[in-house]
Image (tube, rainbow, N blue to C red; front, side):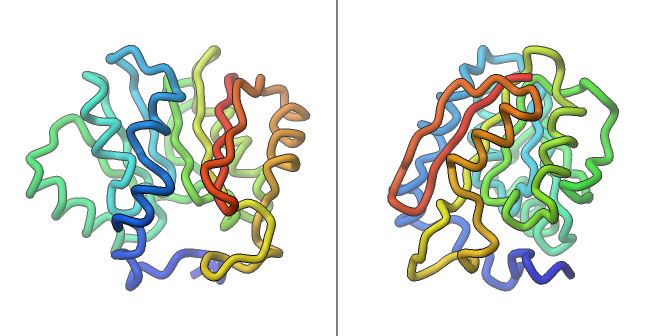
Length: 189
């Protein structure tokens, strides 16, 4: 396992009241401007923090991608509990998304790119699978010292993220701080 990858044994940390207060999935999804019929890819879906709210907003398919089989097993058990339809699970890496080109209307990538080495490889894959005009929502750790989260040297500052996206040809639509530690960027292909 990549030493930057989240430990599946700590999955409860991914969905708790404090995280929901700091990173409200519904408000974050509002930033994508979904119209209700999009096919959406959730990169690093984990336990479905964004997968389930996204599925409630679209009649299209939500693809839940995670590199770790334990995360997908957990997600599968939650899907059965919630009787969620139109969600497909895919095991794969953000660095090499097992999906054809220009398939997605929208991509969600929450707390994943700091685990990708180099992060640009994950962004190139998002660019590849997005349709022209497709939008992506990226949530990451700001590059500063905090009590929890990845080491500072794994983090990507919001300014660095915006510069990288623009250099890759994306159009940055918004950048927003949610707390001192977390930010979101919405961008378009």
